[in-house]
Image (cartoon, rainbow, N blue to C red; front, side, top):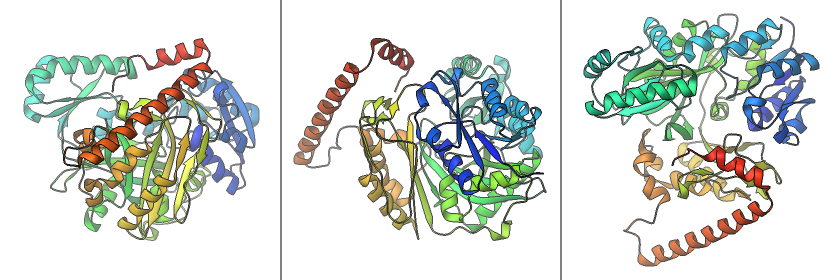
Length: 504
């Protein structure tokens, strides 16, 4: 297969910039696509060429497969990298790209489709001898619903078969909640994913969320690069990731890695992907899902293994073999990633919009800041609130934690509210310091993380905390008023409509 000469990056923000930087290092030309709202952003400035693809709303730009393909053809791009989100796990788009004679930098449509449909994925994993969470396939009627629920046992989860990203999930604790939650889940699945199919799994309340990074080439080589601990979550959305995990020893790492490789082989997987597992208190692991793309948290794997995953993706897409074998993979030190978001944790994590006034990046030894943020950037309601990823590494976990704490204290973003203080509270929590947390820990401790000070602190500390909180609120109110004064009424109205229906 001939070398790749020009890649269109079908994404925006930090992941588009991350891919463009890798292309530049490899001497490959890049094409950025952008919505009207992103015309002057960093990924557009960094690319060799840039093409506008429509209005700010993703449905009219970044999700328009036809416009992206037109841009690729017009610029002579011979490959497309989808990043994560948007069309990255759209099997139909992958097929369209390949039919157009353009290389798709990702797994084939079959793997995307089979792993994206959760019931089919469970079936494939069982056939490949990969442990799955006790459960059942699609439930279509109430009689079978009740029978399967009794067999599985409560609590259980009803999950959208076509869902993903933590969406389309309902937890059921009692039998009298079963039918109503099933009906709501089907309705939500149809509305959100165009597929009303739902299935059930046993709910592992105190589980750890551990994922394994895999990459495969077209020469039959499939390699895993160890695990990432992703249990610090809020509403099934990852907040902090780290590697290695405190609960994974060398034996478990080998077992999970081998299972992840079998999972990839079962669907003839090619390119980078992530197999996600739940690990219970007894150290037993169960297949959760496979993300058929590059993950948001891929940098921590790069930090401890020294493997440039985007570079390997490009090599694989060009038909080259992986540049390393399983025996070459070793994990050195410890890495942590936090997601910096434009949101207000103390107000129920409501998204914050406005213009970034200033940015002081964190730096220093073994600190990586993956972001497309810059002073003057408009943060709108159209896109995900994640502004950046702050990644650190150290010789061991305590060193990495100290470095992350310092980096978070050093990072300053003004003009929009962020979750930096919330992340500091998480990093300083005893549970995180001990490595003793699970997927529901944040939910169970949210009041102490973002609410009023705990009763056991001194009265003076409580008064000081209240004063600081009041002053911050006054500052944000003034900032919000100032932003509204600079914003047209139609845009403000659009923001309000976009936020309607959001509940903390």
